[in-house]
Image (cartoon, rainbow, N blue to C red; front, side):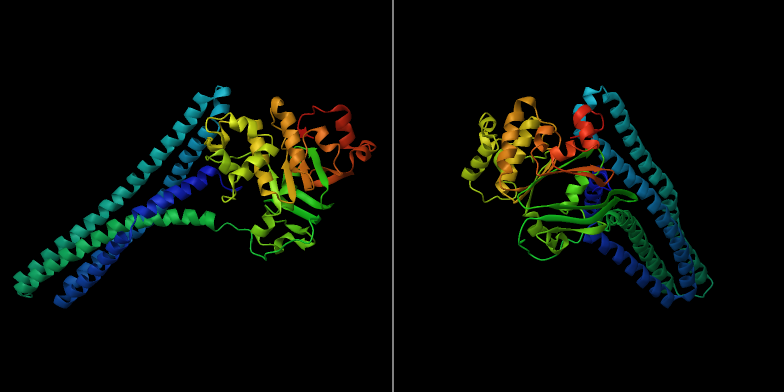
Length: 468
């Protein structure tokens, strides 16, 4: 998902399914039936007269060459068409998801032109495919008709010259008509199969991307100590994490701070095995996280992300996400602890209010409080806060800080920090820059060192490009 856009993935899944549904078993049967009919009729013609049989074989050879040319041309033009489909889907999704930003920056005209350009390119690719394949399709049909004409003329010549009986002449003409009927049937239906073949290849390009091995054992960790041992990670050729070693004791609070793009979020993803390290290892309770099966590993983590995603469902179901059997009383209790019960009760249907996709009907602070309620409902022993207070509304800040305090009691906490007051009391602070831990200690210890942390606290609280 990091290597392919949402538009690409959506287009591949929808277009592939649409094309596959359009090519039913009946189409495959028609192609098979057409090929079989052509083969049987060719054999029958040879039984009646080998000379006419040779004429048909010559015609089939020409037909086959044209068909191969069509296959080669079809693959190229279909790939361009599918790329056009993907571009349109991507532009539409981008427009819809970013409509607020597009409007606020007066870019509606610009994005309309981008969408129009993608649509025009898609139309052009469809027309190009038809124009390039049409002459070859015409040539195929012409060859089929010429086979019929050739068989009729040759049979008549042989009959009038006394080299063929009238019955054989009639039967050869009938066999020829049946043969070309099967040939045209196979050719017409196989064009649909060629499109599907290209669609399936495009889908396989995504399905065959390397996947993370999520097998392993059902393990209950002996403790919740987390350790990273000389871990490294890269996006392609770009190194993001470079030889980090750290220890996070159970029920401690670790704050991770540093310049934007320094690798803070990636480090958290590696500690929780959203991704696998390229080198080194991460352990939980003394066991390599790769020894756990993914479900048993994820049961130990709750996440509160900076950008909260809420589903197009009821408030209650968003809180109990993944735990459909949880009674309503527990949902309400979690919401109260997360300081979101009051605003929920002001909604039209309270906990049964259906929120818009991604929680678009709620404020940023309200979405964040619901995310904390969801984490409380899971009650995992390890909490990861990815700049959870970064986008909070001023009126929700007090409630959010209280909710986070409630959530993190007696937990192992890893927080990517945004504000000084959220990290001052951390048991340890890790300063991450350019994929490495450049400073490590408590707030007081780091303030006593001449480094990034003190310089930032002392004079660059509003520094552009990095967050604390």
